[in-house]
Length: 86
Image (tube, rainbow, N blue to C red; front, side, top):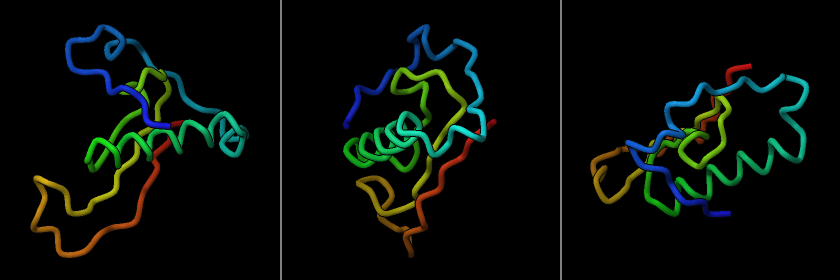
């Protein structure tokens, strides 16, 4: 689901984030978060996004280096990567 991206200056971005316990990474809740991040990142034409940017205070961010409106000279698309701080 595409979420609203929180912009710089929003106090929610300054809140301390929490880690995700390793045992819960495959839970429906975590999987939904990952798909929400992916959907939002791609819909907003970004190459990366962090969970706090969609209002979820956990230590997770994703990146996918690919051609975008501003990154026209990327030679090869890289695989989607999810980074989690347990």
